[in-house]
Length: 205
Image (cartoon, rainbow, N blue to C red; front, side, top):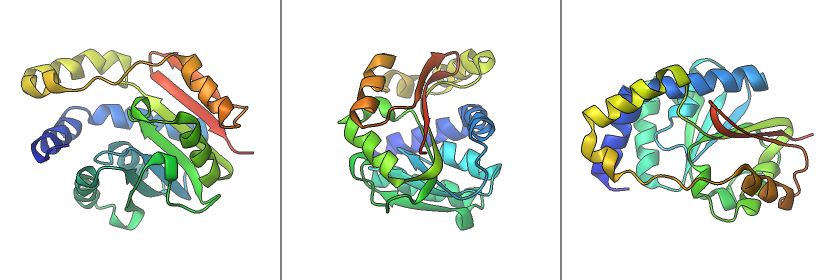
């Protein structure tokens, strides 16, 4: 991503999309109950979801992305939010996560999964690094249905040129993800699509 695009992406996320990340962070906490330990935010971008979750928990967050530019942006946002003691960044791809087996309590991601290649390998890697009892909450969505239209209108009004340039992620059906999870050897999972978006959840037992 070009430097200008990163700056605009970050500005939109911080100024307009912040309620989206707060919305999902709250739901992740309520549905997993994980308040401490380690959290991996895959495809973190500027770190928005992980930071929102770190603010309401004692989780130590690892911000993981294949883009060096986005990780630099995440570092700036970590400092801005005074969360340097709870956060670190990690460069790499989801198909080869540079973390030890059974080392993470919670894996989260918002908005990056439609772009992942070789989904079965990605899911196997996520399962590998997950601790026994650890949870996964990954997918995508635009937050609270009641404020979604307002957020979209603000982006269109304040950043019309950037809005038009955005690459829309491909839409995959639930079966697409279910098949990949089964190929990865993960038998117990949920794939839901509703007003909250598309979300995949499972736990390592």
